[in-house]
Every structure is written in structure tokens, then in C-alpha cells.
Image (cartoon, rainbow, N blue to C red; front, side):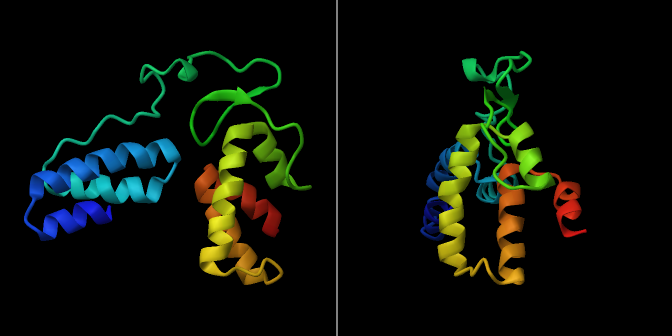
Length: 155
């Protein structure tokens, strides 16, 4: 995103578009939807081609098989891929149960890495209810957890 903006300021519009196109694909692969959406908006505003979503089902990746998950597998709510289910619920509540039923181990590990960044960059103290709510909001967005699932936790 920043590279594209820097190139745009130097009047290298073609370079900026190329940077945003490559960045858009990379952000989608990492699951960084906010960044991907920002780059997509910049591409659309310039009338540039928006690359096909590399994580979309049927994009030619054998991991995106159009099949039902087998026993011990789930279709990941974050990526759409079929993968190994979590062996246990990460939380002892409805959120944990939902995550176990809808998130693969691979996505959960990706969230664990991202959660460290969220905690450190936002300087969250998870003992503070407001900070816990901010953490939950980021987890909800990253894992594509429906708001109703978190609403049950707050009730």
C-alpha cells in the first residue's frame, strides 16, 4: 500500500498500479482483508484491473477442492479451504466451539501469530475489559466469526 502511494507521489502511476495489484494478491493470501480492500479501492478509483482473488474457491489451487470436509476436517470460514479441524475448542464458550467447528488449525496458527502483533501494536492489557473487546474485534474480523457468536459471549 505504502509503496504504491510513494510511487503515486512521484507520478509513476503505472508503478503504483503494479504495486497495488501485487500487494492486493499478497494481502488476500495472508488474509489481510482491510489492506486488500484499501488497495482494491485505489485500483478501482484509477480504473485499473483488479486481480482475481487468489484465495477464491476454484482458483486452480488443489487445496480449494469442491468437496465436503471429511471426518476431522472443516471448511475454513476464513479461507474457504478444507483443512484439519482443531483438536479442541480454544475457549470454553460458544466462541471457542464455533472456532473449533469452522476454523482450521492453519488459520488458528495464523491468528495466533497475528494476535501477538495486535496485542503488541495496540498495547493491549487483556485483563482490561475494553482491551479484551478490542482483541475480540480483531479476532472476529481476522477469522470471519459472525457477530452473533460474540454477542452470545457478551450476554
